[in-house]
View 1 (cartoon, rainbow, N blue to C red):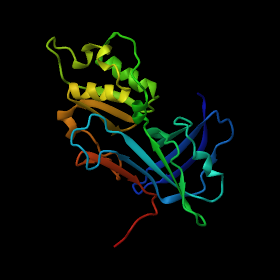
View 2 (cartoon, rainbow, N blue to C red):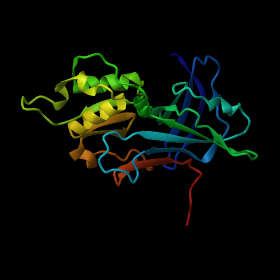
View 3 (cartoon, rainbow, N blue to C red):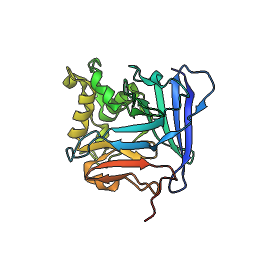
View 4 (cartoon, helix red, strand yellow):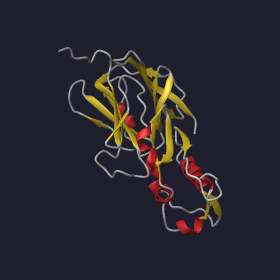
Length: 251
């Protein structure tokens, strides 16, 4: 696939950072448009395990985008069943913070003048649940199987391995091998979950366009403060709300 920049918008955050939203469309070759106006809460990036299980092997992320409908374009173009038609990137001061894909059929719009349009994007990790594990019988390492899975969905964020566990030979536990026959009848999401549970690890977004796979014992060590609106792990879940600079309250 070849993607072209379709829409973009820059705005300052409360802390003076320059936030840039970029929406790329598959096969688009025209001139990119700057979005006229974002809503009062333009971007909300959050993890999906709020109030969920303390230890979940895979912590996915999703992004809400709020746009004010000024009739600049026909925004119903975003109402599509194609899970990879639109790529979404969030940048902070020119550095990519998060990348994902527009969630199929997630477009919504209030029926009023200058209504707010809501778009939802995701990291596409959940797509693994729709992909049957059909790999022929072979011997594969844990790290190779994980790499295979995330290559299949075109993960737009860097995957880092921060696993400290060692096996009896003093090698990384990720180098351990297994037969793929044991995953017959499963989908790829179940395979990744099984692998991570088996080695006591978790995968989650850690900021800076990175997902990390790390020992569950080190959970509290991730979630660095990146801006004045930090991405925090609170109750083992997180939320980052990026507001424009003019949304301030003085009391």
